[in-house]
Structure formats: structure tokens, C-alpha cells
Image 1 (cartoon, helix red, strand yellow):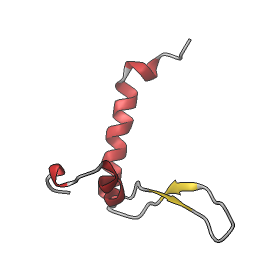
Image 2 (cartoon, rainbow, N blue to C red; image 1 turned 90 degrees about the vertical axis):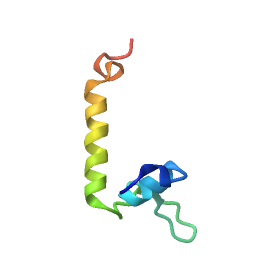
Image 3 (cartoon, helix red, strand yellow; image 1 turned 120 degrees about the vertical axis):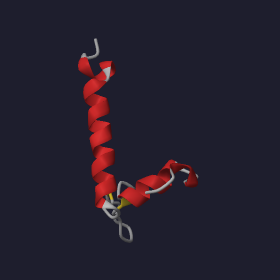
Image 4 (spheres, one colour; image 1 turned 60 degrees about the vertical axis):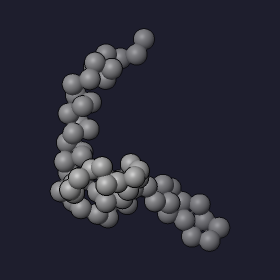
Length: 66
């Protein structure tokens, strides 16, 4: 991935990793928005692991909202 400061926007990193959102539509058909899964698989894996770790260690996700 290199130096992260070379990216101007978060969406560029999402696209590089394959986590960019794409719409599945054709003509008049309105499809669902899904993750593209096109990109660098190792980068996708490590970003997913970081997010998973952040969720498991964050206090906001440990206790149900009351």
C-alpha cells in the first residue's frame, strides 16, 4: 500500500482494498448496493482484522444500549 498520505480521500483506500461500494442496477432495475470485492485481498484482510479488533475492544460495542 505504501505511504498512506498519498491518498486524498478514504474512498481511494476503499477502492484499492476492494471495499468500495457499487450499485447493482441495470436500466430501470434498481439493485442493491454491495461491496465490490475487487482489489488487493491482503489489504482487505488486514483492514477487516483491524476493524474486527477495534469492535471487540471498544467499550461502545461491549454493552447493549439502554
